[in-house]
Image 1 (cartoon, protein in one colour):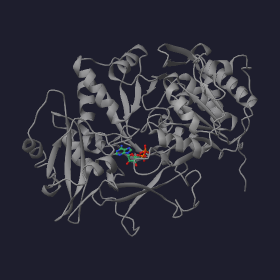
Image 2 (image 1 turned 135 degrees about the horizontal axis):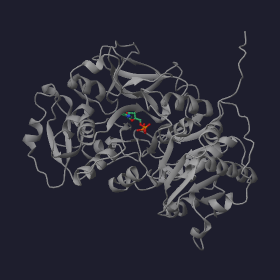
Image 3 (image 1 turned 30 degrees about the horizontal axis):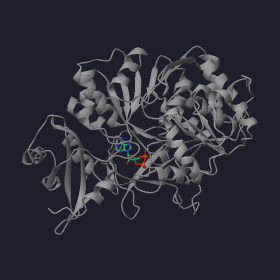
Image 4 (image 1 turned 90 degrees about the vertical axis):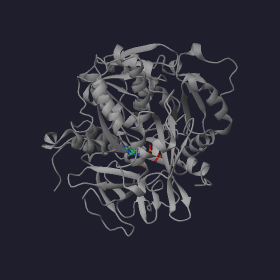
Length: 540
Ligand code: ADP
């Protein structure tokens, strides 16, 4: 029997219209690449998103066509999220930190018709254009006064000119909620980039669950600053979460260094933020250097890579900011788990609470997960057995965009994340490694993440990586690579002794090398593929 409820499909445009109607005066503040602060309201943002929809219609953009962005977190990027998806086209966010060849590959693979870029990326756009024949029009995300003279970019125009004079009223089309709304390629840490195509439905369900108290706990009283870029899995859903709950949104543009972020946190009274560990490590150093304190920031989500417990402790104890650890990936939109205590756990000794919160967290409603062994058998949730982590749910990928063999990726009904994890009896999941990063030593598995977390707890260490290097006797042994903090020294023996008593003896790295820096991926993670290549011939 059919229910008697309105069959209203879930629509991305409805989120912004909600904010425009019910939180019309709430602000969106952006620091632009042009160097100025831009301030307006949800009502104005919605009016401009509607103008954009008119402009795109006039350019003949059809539902399902891909339009790319090469942009920082700004109000214009926010308008593109809604104007493009609202019209039924696909907002394809490009990660400017990818290698040039990867960007060319992605733009051609997606058949992007238009490309919107920030002033910062003008030189990159000019380099890309000759290799990207599908892009008919390059749109500079600025006023016409910033247009370069004599540029060869096809169809170059300014975003402000595109919008100028367009009506501010627009009837958003009613779309199939399963229609594609946005596209994001994985950062290619382990492989060629692969396109994940999000729907209106997956985006809204993901954002709704993200708002829950044990996840983002987003509210109309919040001021939200996503440090995580809008080109990194839709800034973890925050550009949808903020208008959904009516929170003020602060968009930091290209200024992601400690000083720029701190200034914006304070000036705009930010209460809640989110980003990868590298950002918070940088900010922590800046705060320590000037003995600074935040006046309003109280919580932040850290994910995208394992958050070192030392970072969580420093934020809590020195800065009075709670770090909430979350796990996810492009293929899971990205949120899968978030870490908060369950009833009764707040009575545990502090060290036990900290150990629980250092895990990657519990599933949020909508995501189901399990761990399996090599034969696909489910493993117990005892916090000790570890195996391949599988997930499923309405915002988990079912196939990659343009995959040559559709149907294969999730034929079992589950998506294999490529992560290795444990799940404890309370449901807290802990990533022990990426399956390719696990160090297999004499039949035992050693977690590189655990060793890295321990290494960065040493006061002299700024960053650390552990990789498996071939060993005749053990097949692989862990090699520790350390970047020291400025002005700090520590001997190799002292560094290795630091692990004693903290992990099983066989897990302690066999050697340590001090290096000036470590390579990172486009999303700020350690580039272990590169390290494994660089140290492949290391002689123990
Ligand atoms: P890529 O898969 O190309 O690295 P993603 O940004 O999708 O790009 O990264 C997802 C991966 O990042 C996860 O599969 C996991 O290995 C890692 N990751 C994400 N969050 C965490 C976390 N909190 N702790 C440990 N690893 C994490």
